Image 1: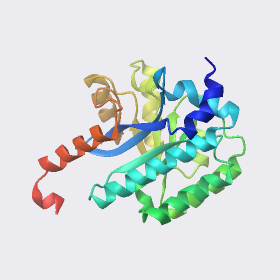
Image 2: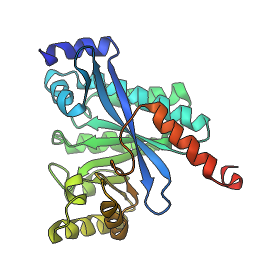
Image 3: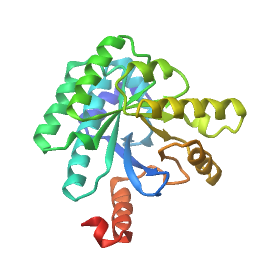
Length: 260
């Protein structure tokens, strides 16, 4: 089966969608953000994850079209939740391959205007599938987004192309510690996380720990001073209805004076 050949048709057939995974505030345990994770609902293969089809999209040049779908979904979700009184940030993954496209910025501006979206409810998460080839252009585009109020997150921090250099160069508001660091208990990884957390906080950048899959992982990142946590121990990615049910339960458990 030629997935590359089917991918273009998948976009036209609206088979590209999203699952949602929450991030919790490490101190309060409350859901404060949600990451949209792209999914391809293939008519015969079922659900296909981004690790399988996003590289094909980047290779074929379809990444801009898929990115546009995800930006639309993220903005629509953020605007709807704002209208319901939920102060939840919505993070949308953006490949480094998308940054040079002029339509990338235009799409976000159009959504903000069309949906009357408060941009502070949206975060673009720069994924490390490719290196950022033109750092100056990337900084310029992301600086425009920061000026609008959109958050900028560096994904998979501490491995691959994500490095201290990116933290220093990009106008980021958040870094996401790579799961390989979070799940390791060797001294080198712990020391690396301590350094990243300290440097990020000096720059007033939040730190999200990804890959939290056990109570021990959660306690480790809490002690290290991470701001948020995300992973299977807290919640697996799921349909939008599932995360909204969680948010409704969270609201119901809060004192009335906090909600007012």
